[in-house]
Structures are given as C-alpha cells and as structure tokens.
Length: 79
Image (cartoon, rainbow, N blue to C red; front, top):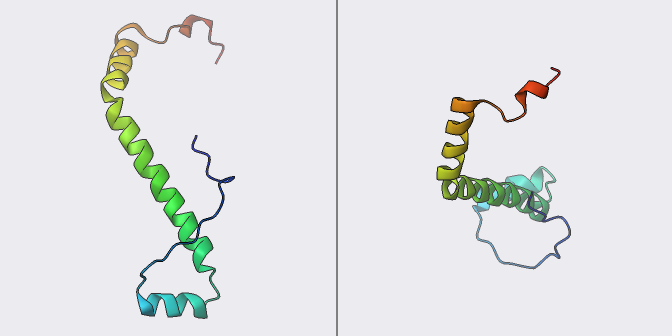
C-alpha cells in the first residue's frame, strides 16, 4: 500500500474556481486538508490503475491457470 501519511507538507500555489473557493470558506472547509485528501485518493487510484495495466499479462495468466487447474491448496480448505 502507498504510504503518504508521514510525508512532510510542502507549500504550493493552486488556481481554483473563485466561487467554489468562496463557498468552501463559507462552509468552514479546510481547503489544504480537503485538496490534500482528494489528491491523495486520485494519486492512489491512478497508481493502481497503471499497476494493473502494467501487470495485466501476469494477472491474466494467473487467472487462466486458476480457471484451468483450480486453487493450488484448495483440497486443504476447511470452508
């Protein structure tokens, strides 16, 4: 799993929709925390999408092997 929680914060400049920013402030939202959380989720989503694409052949081969031969230790399962 990706670990971002212990990384230091870094100041950055963003250009945001002025009306959305105004409304967020009126709602008492912490803009930095909100953007950081949403960006973290999007980075994780894209990372795993790329990982799945890079490993597609291996995943397909594994799934084909399981479909053909079953799970390797299936006879020992108690559930």
